[in-house]
Image (cartoon, rainbow, N blue to C red; front, side):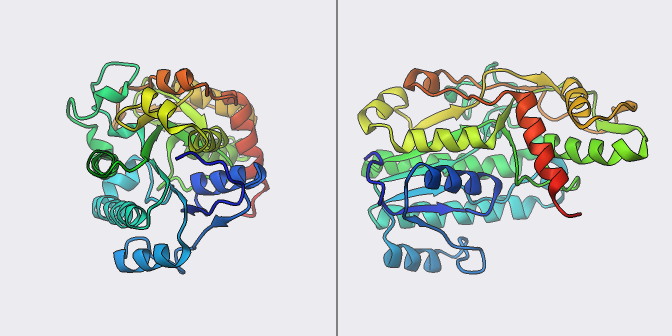
Length: 318
């Protein structure tokens, strides 16, 4: 059932993260005045008993499940147990409790890394489980696939209005800029901002040829609100399996992305490549037909989004 009442109780799980904070901000600015949130210290989403008690007490009508352990290639390779176990535990506890509490609609935030490494481009929702995953992020991907399938299982067995959104690579204010655990775009902003004053070269992992698509987190937040407000019959007609890719429909090579970030930041030094490091998936561009058919498209150009993100990053205390 769609979101209409500005006073509806909406639980945003992970409201302090990149996605969750953007979703909470978007919903609040759109007039929804009863957002329910909990910090990690207040509620461990990996604990099914605590989560069930929370749902029993708060009775949210809508849920946006944005809480997750996230990170780039290095983080996935370093902490595979954490990425697999924590995400499985969070998803299972929240999705199960949401159904038990009679939540009207749940939106599960997945990732386009769920698709096979060699799937035809652009990636369609139907490509799920048609081939092997990219090894560098398979722990996170397997967990997210389980979340999508759990939502689909509740839809099939119980008629639950649970929807899974698959956003492409995200970035924006509030991102993680730690080069050990961050994704490529914030890592590049961190590198080039630091090299701008030192004048030293910036090294990119891999060949620089993989192509990626980047979505500003504020665009994703608007997509979440759009789906929450979409009539269930219209939504089911566009996505009978409950899956929707969210992206911009355009991609860029990692090397060209680095040049763009360097230009925005004002770095004019040397960019070097380290081919001994992994490239990851050769290309990851999503098919956004389902979302565009519903009437939603991204609106923030990449250069504008990078400039916005860099200004936020530069303003933070070091």
